[in-house]
Image (cartoon, rainbow, N blue to C red):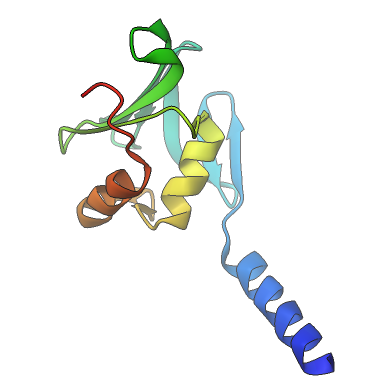
Length: 128
């Protein structure tokens, strides 16, 4: 019993130590208090911009379309890759957290190979 409890404790500590804290303040995304990305847009259309000023991700909330009542459309602009999701609604912070968890976002840059895996994992092909 003690061994299982100790293992669980170390596993939990390991996750907490290696996870990054995501904060969004005044349209700037901070990872562990370090500026990483900028955000522009409105409540339905959000652009994520890298520190060089390049728009890299576009997040769109689609309401009452012929495909369903609400879904997300996420476009990785440089790669011309898109995913749509209705069962998993991504907000700004949740999207960044999932990109970090999947190692798509690493050192404030996108990993192109990991993007494809991320899309395979979350894309529901709503618009197709």
